[in-house]
Structure formats: structure tokens, C-alpha cells
Length: 141
Image 1: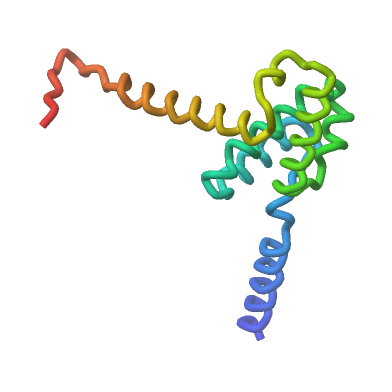
Image 2 (image 1 turned 180 degrees about the vertical axis):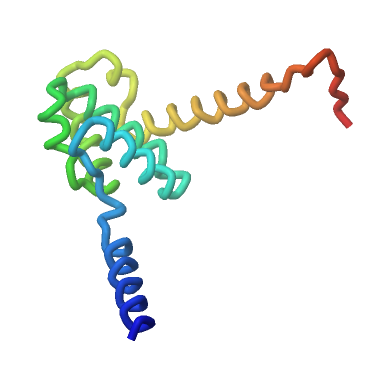
């Protein structure tokens, strides 16, 4: 009987963990929204990560009121947030927002920021060397 109750509790716990909305943004607070966005971003394919991140910050920049922003993004999937980011981009571009005028479309902006991120990663890897500890010398072999 003990084994049966232990198995039953395990199955209940596993189903609760497995049935969470892991691909939706939890925006109960700004902290939970940022944490949720980071978790979702890390699960996305590489080519969608930057687009998702830019969409999030584009929407955040366009909605200044924190509670309105959280209400807007709460429960959104990555695809829904990207679509919302595209809409905000297009509306701001049409209204003459100076940061977006230089891009002809959303894809061009994403390509620009992707290349910028690649260049940042190259530069950071080239310049990060571990300093010697306690006067010791590190040799590259």
C-alpha cells in the first residue's frame, strides 16, 4: 500500500510539473517577466532568440506604464510576442520614430542586430584572457 501511495504522489507531481505553461510569459511582476523571458529565450532555436529578445524590448520601450506592459505580455507565447514586436516596429516606423527609419523592414533590423551580436561575441572572446594568479605565468600550449 505504501508503494502505491508513493507512486501516486510521484505521478501527481510529475503531471503538475509537466503541465505548466513553459512557453508562455509569466508577467505577474517585472522580475518574473524578465526571468520568464530569459528561460523561454534559452529554449528557442538560435535564429529566433535575438528576434524574441528584440521584440520584448521593443514592446517594453513602447509601453511606459509597467502594469500596462505586464498585462500586454502576460501569457504570450514567443510567436505572439514576436508578432506584437513587429506591429510596434511598423507603427513606430510609420510615425517616423528616428531609430527605426534607417531600416526598411523588420527583417533588416533583425539582421543588423544579429550581425552586431556576432561581432560582440567575437570581440569578447578575443579579449578575454585570464589574468595570472599570485604572480604565476600562464602559457598557451
